[in-house]
Length: 112
Length: 114
Image (cartoon, rainbow over all chains, first blue to last red; front, side, top):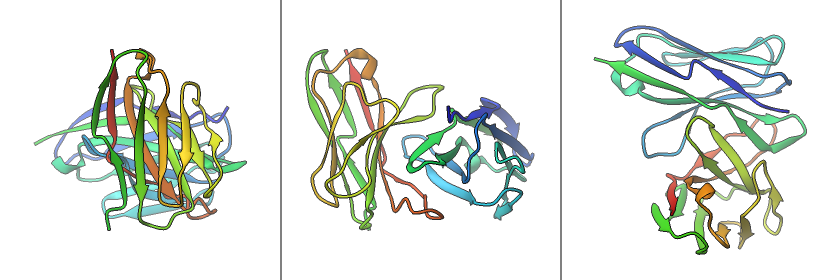
């Protein structure tokens, strides 16, 4: 099915370090989305990717849409304490734009 | 703009009780969604409404019903709550067009069923 496998499950890093997380699927996705969830809040969209091979940046965040359309990664450079939260990859199934699937999330902790 | 507003923020139910979670959006979006979030499992789609007057099942619809009351409001009902429905529930809305799949989420309802 259209399951998204996200890794790592959690990361503990020092402020200033770079972070990399990824998402894979056994099925093709035509759109990859990366969301961040702060404690007690709903997820907020960080980056949207629409083309295989696409590399997109949003400030210190960079995400890539894998060539095979079965994976994506998110990098955060020079992490700061407010980067703490849960990061989710997501994508709509190819046959239904309303059926958005989410990975299980990567929980990021940044130590000052 | 308030965006997506859902109520209540917290709820405790006994097994077998019923309740309705309310959701409203002020962005004139056609599509609205209910997700549940469980530890280690990400968000899973319960039901969605692609437009006023239509509703469809998502990944995990069993034990739930929904009503798209009008374009703004989409409610989720638990007729007979079970402990397995203890979760955090999120309402969301979007345009859901290709190239515009961005979901806007409410701040969640933490539900405990004892």
